[in-house]
Image 1 (cartoon, helix red, strand yellow):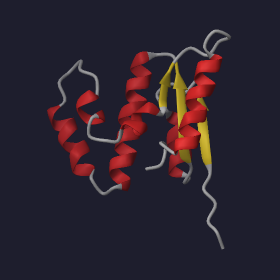
Image 2 (cartoon, rainbow, N blue to C red):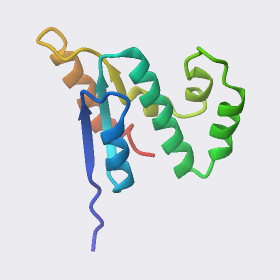
Image 3 (cartoon, rainbow, N blue to C red):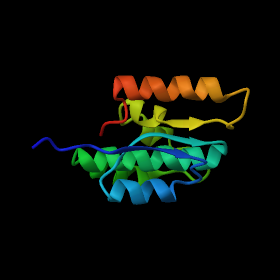
Image 4 (cartoon, rainbow, N blue to C red):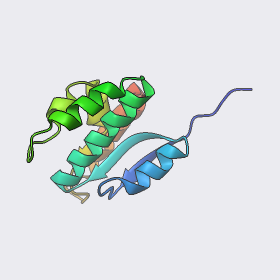
Length: 117
């Protein structure tokens, strides 16, 4: 029997509460789409956490938390995971002027499989 992998796209993702539930249920994210930069930074950090956990490298995440400088973004952590993990967070407002670009980014993520942990 072939195990089916379920994927999802989180629109208006906020800080990722819905994504966390889907990930805990065994789904894999293709993309998280959110317009607020701080929420996107949280999504990137959580994506890095899930990747590192899957690769049994949580020590990198714990070290990042111990040394994180208040007010800094998570780039020190994000640089420790493949670029595709954080590229799955699309920081954009969904609207008629941006929708084609968002679709193109999601299509690229689907084709290249960058969302895989």
